[in-house]
Length: 408
Image (cartoon, rainbow, N blue to C red):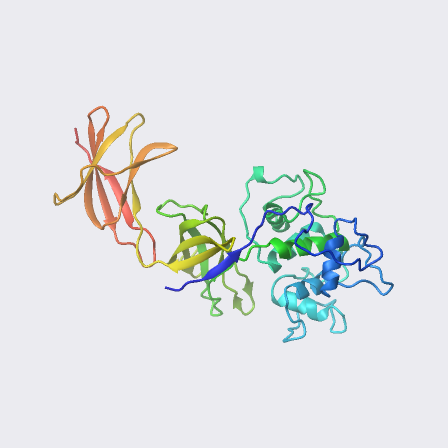
């Protein structure tokens, strides 16, 4: 089995906290006094030759940072070589004579920064706080969390908006806060000082994620992910596990074909979970051919850091067989036998649901069975349980249950 390891760093670090992991540097710019909250970030990035000041020796931390400047900084932070194999990004306002051309082209190639719908890039346009969030999420491949309304403290941010979702990703990781407790200022411009601290904080605390990828197909037959089933020992559809976070990141349709989807996996805490990925060949609505991949996800803390090991699963897990009950019926005992009379259990373990009177047993053998349920009032009910081998690569058996009629 193939083993893949990745590291998940500490993510709970608020932007308002000092970057204590950085050694205090000498003041690089006269207009960046050490009392400023972004001073350490500016000094460290300058020491590393990631950022530079102006010809007059000033950094001008209060100036809005431009899209071209952000591109140049991100390329250096990501250690991308902007002078190697540069592809023309095709932006009509960025010629090869532009000092940011190579950086912009490299980030466009890696789909970290894109242009406007009119074909421009806007290298001199100021960057908004929302745009910066999206750039950082893409550059560091930050976890794409799902959000519900109560997890969003900002009245000017909607999680359904592309920038909005990325703002909340940064907020959840503790990389940034709002301009007030309930307003993010998503359309306000980011200053050079603020951008320095945002970028360096993200570099320090971002988790390393692992991606399971499909292969883009240029023939028109597109391989796509459509569902994630997570958590150990359950056949319920659960989009995520307590052990790890998984998210489907869709590809794009381009003139040369579909770029392919990927599932991003981020470990959260120690333990074992399972991951089943479903998808299809062809457009999702056509559902031309279904396929599944299944993994065990082991997360362990090693040297103080969470690491994940993905093991491709070849076996099938115990699967729930749901026995539907009427309101008020309480189960005392379940007898489980094959239809040929072989007794598998006189006292089959069962579990209940939190939102239903129904119970379920777990099965791990194929065949036809009868579950006889004895209730606390002495009455009984019988259920047929049909268990079939699952389609290739699925984690769980196909189970069908039905209550038998005419039982005392």
